[in-house]
Amino acid sequence: MISSVALAVVLGLALIGAIAALVFTEVRSRSGVPPRPAPAAVTGRDALNVIDLGLRSLAAECMRAGRALPDVYAVVLSGDRLTLRLSGADPEAPPPWTTDDSGEEWSAGPAQLGGTDLGVASDAAHPYALTVTIGLDRSDRVMVELSRASAAISVTGDGGDVRKLVRALVAELITGPVGRHAEVTLVGSAATAEMTLGLGLQSTRLHTVATLREALAQESADARASAASGAASPVTQVFRLIEGSSPVIVQGRAPRLFVLDAAQFRDEKEAMTHLNATDALLVLGDVPDYGWRFRIGDDGSLDTGPLGLRVGVHAGRLS
Image (cartoon, rainbow, N blue to C red; front, side, top):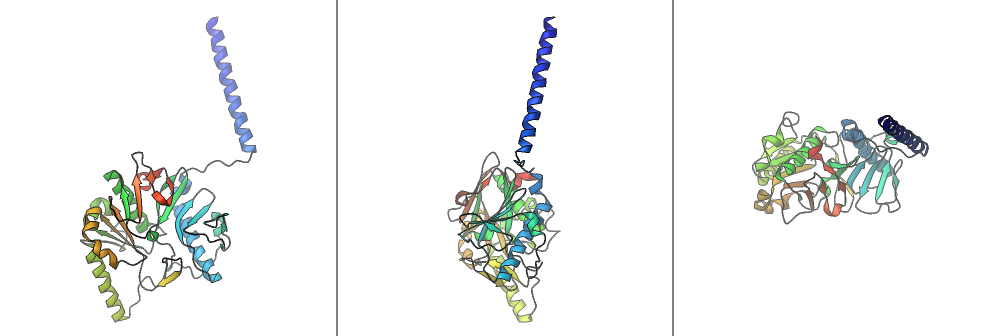
């Protein structure tokens, strides 16, 4: 008898809990509060296509308006908004972009970008080709424009995690739509089989060299040969940003990312002076002279330092 009463009480409590949960769900749905998007909505190839379209359509609108490109250092994709973070206030955003109160963030809904006539921002030009995913903040995809670092970008933390993150950055630039014109050069010991597995066969834009001096010398030789022959580069117009946020057209030169380890960085510091202002340099390990430092935590989070971007899980762990 006692057991029957206890069972009835337990079942009654369970029924009450279920009804309460249903009532809460109904109230929440009627309140109009949208659920957080699932991470899959911002991590796949379709998400990269949205970001690529957004950046190229932005270039088209700025060119049509005869205005400078905004100085974007980060891009965040949530389920329903694409947000650009600017290094300074710029309150005059071209449609369909809108600004926040500070003028330092521009945003647009992905659906608003679908009808954009890319026009001059065609497949042969991309304004932010070194924009790459560094990880997720809950269910937001967080990207940075590597060329905006004023000096080397240091990636520190557990050695295995550092290599995973850097490999993810390289892979996205080589295989993704945003970095379709970027050149990536792995220098010295950074050119490991782990870093290049499968990528070298997919693109001629991935290079390996023994030293940074060798890479820069080869670029100078190629430039001289191209000038002498009058041959046009496959990348005829690449819109880049330089210090001060003024856009320039770089004829015949693709945006470049160089990857090397900390020891080689220290050995070749003098060669750094020959890099272009729009190049990016990614260093595996801690170095004293850096523009940005990304520190990987034991839990897979990423501390972006002064950039102030929150990353709960870095891109190397997403795959």
